Image (cartoon, rainbow, N blue to C red; front, side, top):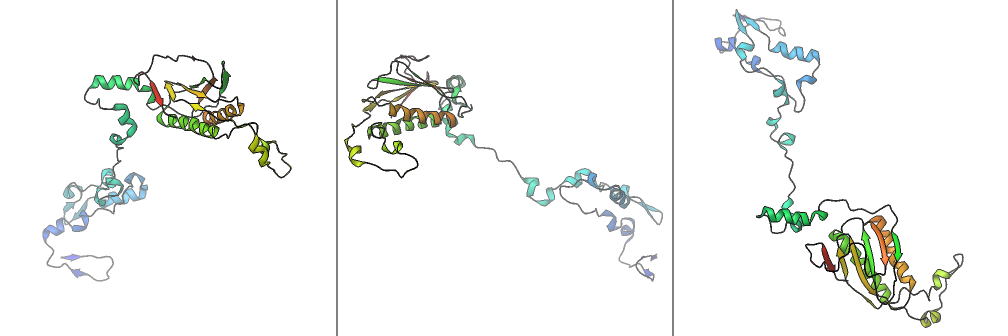
Length: 293
């Protein structure tokens, strides 16, 4: 038997090692075209698709038809072209890692120890609803400032927020009042000694130490704890001396906080009552909390 090889000019006899099975099922007919991960056969050009199809067309060798019927399930499909499992990794085996909410301290604080009691959990979530996933940003609206029979020696300062305070918000408000009290107690807010602010801007600043030492001191006497009910808060103060500069410093700080961090609707100086504040409401479940300054 003779076989013709186009690339050779001479004819060669077929090796005796090739059996009749090899003739009927030539090895090269079972080879698939090279696959590339992530590319579908639908992206091939029409000429390329025709060429691949012709590889699987019927071939007549000595009256025996060799093609799709003999090859069995070797047809190249779109699923084969998209299959990248043979890569052994990469994007084919990548899985999205779920977030571990069991270690979230905010969820743990909300849920508490009521996972085994659905009714208790529902009640707790209802009480904590104001702390669950709501926007906390500054307010573009200017903070209102009002006075209601304010006395420097014995008065409340009331704050009304747009939203219920989160833990971080409470810490910021407490730190603000704590810093305000420290500066005032050290005499830092004394309008009787404003030498540098009264100096002309076009000249080198000067300071008279003797004058600064002889002014009447302005000392912040005492401050209470910060009390919170829902979106309301109050704090008792005993400023002692009538020093308006102390109030200006606090208003300036709260104005910046309201604009950038926590929206404050209104600040009220003085008064024993404000809005929906209830004196008999002293339980944490009802939305009341107290924080040491």
